[in-house]
Length: 435
RNA sequence: GGCGGUAUCGUCUAGGGGUUAGGACGCAGCCCUCUCAAGGCUGAAACACGGGUUCGAAUCCCGUUACCGCUACCA
Image (cartoon, rainbow, N blue to C red; front, top):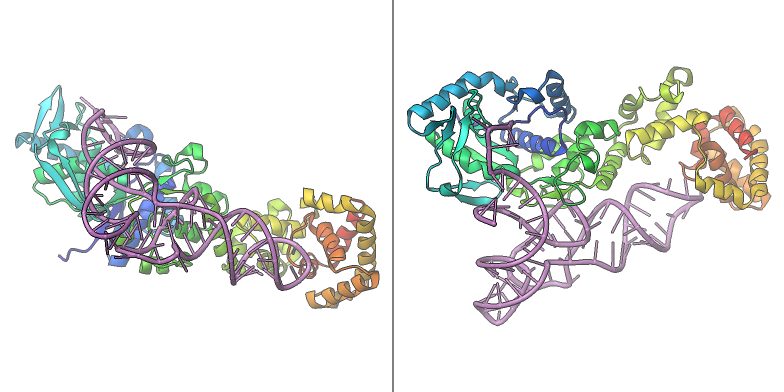
């Protein structure tokens, strides 16, 4: 049998998929795909108290969302308990382990244990520095460092790629491989992901589960792109990877860093914006479709094309899909308009001018033939009007923008008018004259 | 404490004996422009510290410091 690459992601089902775990899974998957090998999933469910079907499902959903497909059937660690016990008994019989107070303890060899890590190069420990440790508890349940070895062996894992918090466990595991008569696999320890305070990312840093980012409107391709660049880089200055294939092509274990990275939410959002603005409107529409009714946007009544157009116009400004949904919502449901402080400032600066501008605009826009209610013509009409009024274009564009959105920021006003539509635009302008 | 690991702008990172130490996010300014975004240009911003090796160290070696991990009959 050719030694094809076989890697695994082995989370314990704690109820969510941590971004650190997701990044580790991504690296494993990328490596497997690049090598034409297999990516396996093993659920470390030996801790029954913390495990449940739902928890497992959350992990599977998270991996699926990220596009990391698993090649073989999921392995549940708990299912191998008799095998683990037999292996421990074998070590006991061979004198490589001993019984004490009912538990089976592994006898650590008194020699140097070293390996060439694919990321860290050579790492060495003295066996004498490591205490003997329990492999089978007195209730006959196996412990972590033992089951990992037993299962990686059983699954034919060739490369153990995991967080560098496992470096200190590695000599124990290597000793078990040897006691069992096997060569250890290649170890690939990847650096941790830290929070902004430099400490291991945890719940007090806010969102740490990939599910949280999904809920917050992050695109899976953006999350992947971002995670891939945490602790790895392609060796050139490319940062934008719009497809998972590009990532597979670029990925290599050699370029995994040794240093922990800080999770930078701002950069994730920027990246997400980059992805959103390059995602086709209909794909974006599919993502926000379920949010729209809650925002009072009824697609059937408006016509799908109109909503799609609004999505297209807004996508280059949105950083999350929620952001996008909200912007689209405001265009079709006046009840969603909330005046921003900047808008209030603009109005308060010269309320009479604001109202006068809107009055003139309202009067002029009314005369526009509905058939000519399109950006180019609208811009001409408004510029002409500004001229007549002796105003700079901004003198009327800005009041319209505020009237239509409650904000001083939007797409170009002529486009905005088109998106909102003639009737609704006129109503909003009329209403804003009371502000 | 012991053992192991890490150390380039605030953050993600490139580089690696002789460089104006490069890019990206963010920040500031300018351009574009009806605002914003996008884009373009510019700016502020880094080799943790101390020794050594060397003609020359951010780069190699040692030490210190800081941080991280392991040190469970958790995983």
